[in-house]
Amino acid sequence: MIEIKNLTKRFEDFTAVDSLDLKIKTGEFFGLLGPNGAGKTTTISMLSTLLLPTEGEILIDGERLTRKNPALKRKISVITQEYSMRQDMTMDEIMEYQGRLYFMPVKKIREKSEELLEFCDLLPFRKRTVRHLSGGMKRKLMVCRALLTDPEILLLDEPTAGMDALSRRQMWNLLRQLNDKNLTILLTTHYMEEAQSLCERVAMMNHGRLEEVNTPQGMIEALGCYTVDQMTVSGTVSRYFHERSDAITYLSSLEGKCTLRDTTLEDVFIERADKNK
Amino acid sequence: MGIITILWEKWREFRRDFYKITLAAMIAPLMYLVVFGMGIKTVTNGQPYLNFLIPGVVALTTMNGSFNAIAQNLNVQRLYEKAFDQVMISPTPLWQFIVGQIIGGSLRGLYAGIVILVLTIPIGTGLVFNGYSFLIMFLNGAVFSTIGVVVSFYARNHTDVPRFSNYIIMPMAYLCNTFFSTEQMPHGLREVIGALPLSQTSAMLRSIAAGEGCGYTGILILGVYLLVFGALAFAFLYKKKNL
Image 1 (cartoon, rainbow over the protein chains, first blue to last red):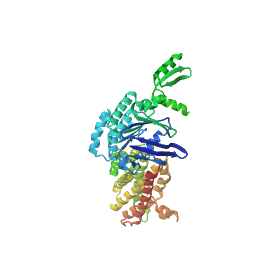
Image 2 (cartoon, one colour):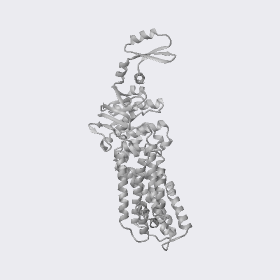
Image 3 (spheres, helix red, strand yellow):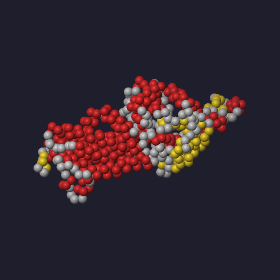
Image 4 (cartoon, helix red, strand yellow):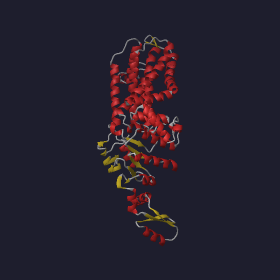
C-alpha cells in the first residue's frame, strides 16, 4: 500500500504539488491525470526519491520512504518520462547495470534480461548502443529494465509517449499482465483512452492539487454516460446526458451534423479543463 | 556491493575507450616534457630540469586523468542523459556510488600517471618511483575525483564543468609545484599555493624520486581534502531536495 500524506513540493515561490493525500492499494492499477503542469511528474519524482518533499511524507507498506531506505527502494521501479539511459551502453549493458544496481546475481540478470528482451522483441538488437535505437525501442528497453528487478511497485510516467499505436497496444497488454500478477502500478498519462482502459481508479490533479479520485466509470457517470456532439461553425459542441432517452430527444431536436456516442474519460478531462480555464 | 557495480561501469567504459583514453592521457604531458624538458634544456639545482619536471607532470597527469574521468562524465549522466536518475532510484546506497566514482577516477588518474612514467623510461633519468609514489598518485587521483563528483553535482549546465576546469584546474596545473618550485613565489602566495593538493603531490613525488622519501604531512593534507570534498558530495546527494 502506498500512502501519500500531505505531500507538498515547492520550487521557491511555485507550488508544484499542494497537500496531496492519496492511498493506493497493493495490486491496484492507479492513474494520475491532469493537464500539463498539474504536478503528476513531480509526484512521481517524489515517489522515486528523485525529489524530496517540502512537506508531508510517503509511506510504503507503513514504512517511510527516504533516499536512505534501500529495502524500500528495492520494491520500486520507475519508467521516467525521459529516456534516462547511458547513450553509450548496449542493451545488454543497460540491463546488467540495472541488475547490479539492484544487487542481483549476474547469472540471474543475464537469464532474466534474455527473457525480457525476447518478450519485447528486442533480442536481435541487444548489442546495439542506446544512441542507435528508435524511440519505441528505447521505451521498450526501459520497460525491460524496470521489470528486471521484480518490483512490487511500478511507477510509469507517460510510458507510451512517442509510441506507435501497435506498440502502445502491446504495452497495454504487458501492463495488464503485470497488474494481474499483483504488481501495483501508478501511471501518469496524457492519453485518456489509456487511463480508461487500464486504470481501476484515477486521480485528477490540477495546479498541484488533487481534485477527485474515482473509477474512470464513476467519473464518466457523474458527467453523463451519453454524449451528443454537434458540429458548429465554431467547432464541436458536446452535451452530456445521464439517460439515453434524453440524449436521443436532444439529438432529434438538433439540425445539422450531430452524433450520439458514449462519454469517455477524455470528455471528463476536457470538461474539467474548460471549467478550470 | 554498489562500489563494485560502479567500478564495473568504469571498467566497461575504460575497455571500450582504451585507445582514446590512453592517447588523451599522453598528448599534453608529452608536450610538456618535450617542450620544457627536452626543448628548453635547463638545469635546476645542478640537476637536469627534466628530473624536476617529470614528477610534476606525473602529478598533474593524475589530477587531469581523475578529474576529467569523473566530472564531465557524471555531468552528462546527470543533466543530459538523466542516467543518474536510475542510480538515485535504485537501492544502491549513494555513499557507495560516490566511493565507487572516487576509486574509479583514482584508478584512471593512476593509469594516466603510469603511462607517463612508462614513456619516460627510455630517457633514463634515474628517478625513483616506488610503492609510495603510486599510493600518492592514487590519493591525488582520489582528491580530484572527489572534486570532480562535487563539481558535476553542483553544475547547473554543461558549460559549468569546462568553466571550473579553466578557472581552477588549469591554473593549478601550471602553478602547483609542477613546472617550477613554489619556493620561488612571493611570501603569502607561496603558502596558499603550497597547501593545494597538487603542490603537495608534486612535492612528495619529487622527494621520493630524488630518493629522499616523503613525510606524512602531505598525505595528511590530501586526506583532509578528500574528507572535505567527500562530505560536500554526500551532503549534496542526501540533503539536496532537487537534483
